[in-house]
Image (cartoon, rainbow, N blue to C red; front, side):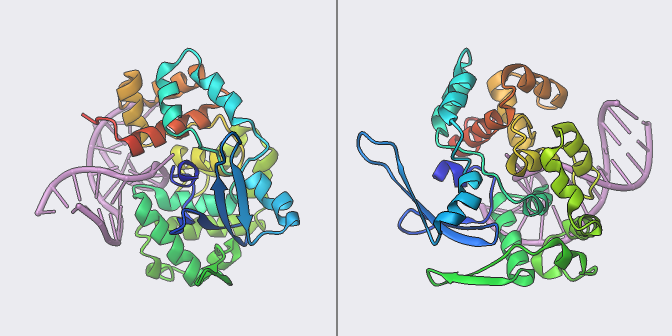
Amino acid sequence: MDHIFDCGQCFRWTKETDGTYTGVAHQRVVNVGLTVQEHESGLLTIKNCTNAEFQDIWEDYFDLKRDYGEIKRKLSIKDPIMAEAIGYGSGIRILKQDKWETLISFIISQNNNIPRIKGCIESLCTNFGDEMTTFKGKTYFTFPSFDRLAALEDGDLDCCKLGYRAGYILKTAKAVAEDGGRALEATETQSPEEAFAYLTGLSGVGPKVANCILLFSMSKYDAFPIDVWVKRVMNRLYNIDEKDQKSMEAFASDHFSPWSGMAQQYLFYYITKKGISLK
DNA sequence: GGCCAGGGGATTA
DNA sequence: TAATCCCATGGC
């Protein structure tokens, strides 16, 4: 679970003192714990969740139907470097998150760091989301809808300390709300190229942010987001020029497709957590 | 006090 | 097309 929740794909899960994680997604609060038993695979426990909610939401959210062992084998074969990275973040699963929330979250992520991103999103939710429930003594709020944010004006988001990203969020919220979110939802069945084109047409969404949204909310597992960390790790591990993004994309396509996004997460986790030498 | 953070948009060249 | 600058914010 540490690998899943601390690999930079999500920002609303927090670790409890007992090692379990509590988080919000799809208007629900749940607490998840994993018990690893001897001679058994792990037993996942989801609290504050009905059977119907598990089938409607969490089974897909945690991507539980997918065989990650098979994907890891395919990525590892003939690539000892990737095998090493996978060994380090072996528990990673790509969550299938809400499109709208992921869109705004990764606009916030630009030129920012993860602790601050979490703080900004938390502030956005407590200020503009709806109070949902109290769990383990903490009050939880929904992620604000696009209609809610689209109704705001310049300056209304100042309390969230979003900096220059506030303007992007207002423009994007208005654009998404324009057709009731239909264009955003339609990406579900579009090709990665079509969905990428739509996303990069939104304010504050460039190639990197668009690829994160494709990967973390739209099941486009061949998307390969390139940020400063990925540039570093591609340079250190595969000896690619750090400013040559085209070569990085080509390398990912050649070596990791159709699971480039999974590979990217293993590399990201490897360099940000293990902290392999940067110089 | 300068550098950095899961970059993008606008302006130059 | 490709490089460069600017953009708020806060931790270090």
